[in-house]
Length: 428
Image 1 (tube, helix red, strand yellow):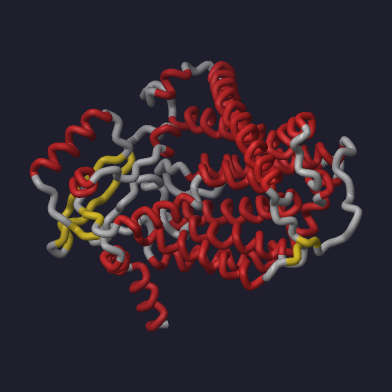
Image 2 (spheres, rainbow, N blue to C red):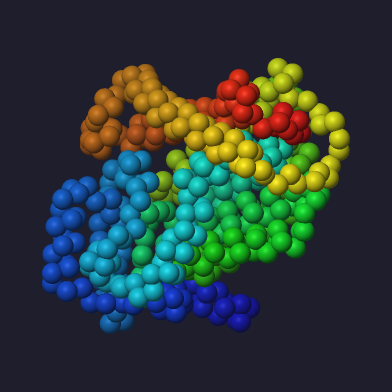
């Protein structure tokens, strides 16, 4: 027991994060007076810091503690991309990037677990690869993320402090244990691997290598950026692997039920809303995890409702031949059609998101008799409870429609334009 406790404390130590950062060329520097003034001017210009920084001294070493302000943070603040774009920015925050290759590689790696990645990869997969695998992958991803996000807000472990250097401020208001990036790094590539290895004829060893590289890149990137301790990563990996064991066969059977059962849309919406309302959390600190979880749940519901609609309308049918299938490597014409589908589809998805976000936001504020501008300005006259209702509601409505458009509306448009993927409506 003592050995296990020692190992856990070692993996939890921020100094281990700092060692990883130093290995990949991140150097701690003392901010010069000029760079400090640049940072101070930038903070004053923004005028709406999401955190208050307090510097304490513990055992002779400075330690930065971050405390949220009393009001909730808007979506624009919490989701903004804030990687440092210049050496002045980074040095003002106390570090210098000596190896740009690792910085850009790990920034790309951490992007594989971002909302932007989900918003592009999931539609691309449905429109250009395989809808049957896509539905199962999305459901596995959703369950993994809900459990991981819930545990994160129950455990409430902070992200690594001094001497680790935080190269990225995005998600700084979230807790760290377990790493949901690590859970995504397992759930997405390995669910794709497990659902395709018996469905298509391809070298499985190649798929295993790609999945391991994908997973490793994301996990190392989170430590490199100072966003997670090694223990956070290990816990996320272990939890996701443990969940995959029952989820892979369970989701495989559940997918057909959700596709063919008459009451699937009602059940999906009711369960998703209930999971948002009864989202597990502890304490009064606001974090963006609940809003992100609402988005994940609603996208999953929308994807499956769109697929259910295809089946109920008789558009989707059983394939004429059983798997495994030979992989059709794309010709120039197929690649051109794939690019065309992606460009048209993502443009429509972005337009849908923007319009639905505006319409649902205004409608919910009107129903609650709130001033939308007051909420966006974080006005103190609006209670945090009301802000949460507005945020969760518009995210849920918008994401359901985005998911529905991904599997029903846009494939219908592709079919009308004559650019649809031939096997899309046979992928059950």
